Image (cartoon, rainbow, N blue to C red; front, side, top):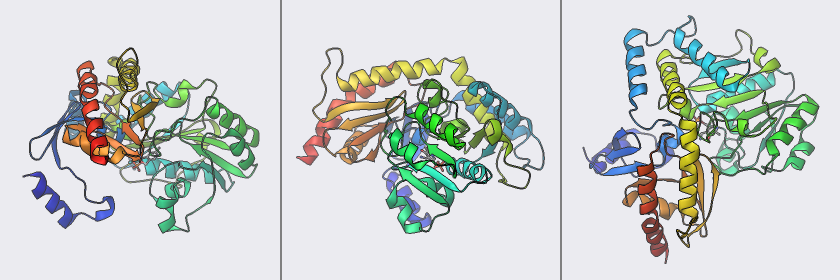
Length: 399
Ligand code: PMP
């Protein structure tokens, strides 16, 4: 089976809503991937920030194998141990009492938050321009990207989108009719956009004053991705009412969660919400393996260390040189945006792929890096060695 053959079959059988992907992958191990033609890649896409421990991590393989061999699925009509244990473990990392609702994706986690918001009895929602929260209709209503929304109007809800990072605009939009404010601690899909210091704290104060819920969408930033269990924990004095999670939580299995605290945790009542697969024991066993491994192997520290190394290497700190196509690096931990001086990110992505590096281009001038949290020194070195040639190639193609 070659890349070409798999691509032709893909085109015959799959809906074309993603456009035709350029690469057919057949195997992964750690931060390495192999395509159908046998070519090897260093994976800095990570399944879009999903593969927290890389590919085929032994702890995940073992947990999933053990669980599927003993109890694969029971539905929400019964209790199984893995979702209970995973909810308890998540709450330990939040360091607070709360309640967890498990689902299968980020969009569904946001839908759960949307329903919790509705149950406050208020209708208005404030979210951010450029924000991304998923493609189901409720999540899309909260998403602040017109190109993704416009084909599907009207969308549910009374949603005001304010400029991201602007606490004054947020304060002006939030009223006593506002059920909730939904914010990403860092806007991932919008190009790894980091808000000014104090933004989350201001959002907390503004929502507290009107009795509105503060919902932090940590689907992309959560589960150690930024060097903290949850990115909001890097910001002193911010305690959200609801946090949405997915991506890294399942370590490659489909798993999302809506986590609520305080009065927000008591709003969903029996009959209000549900999904057949939510809390699936196999997905939750994978989630426990991910959280165990992050804790036991000191991966939050590794994320911080490798992040610094990548940043320094790309920005040319400490005597190395910065490529003329690189402006700066933004983001946190291993969610980094390499900001370019020209809108050549798609060319960089292609040149990287040709050179055996997988990266992603969420904006014309931003290359996003989302490698596994257990990324090694050798892999960072390999990336930094290959990068100048990739950037030369992208610039040369453009010239
Ligand atoms: N919220 C955020 C912050 C995301 O980055 C994403 C996915 N990129 C989602 C929600 C939606 O997640 P999913 O694709 O699993 O529905």
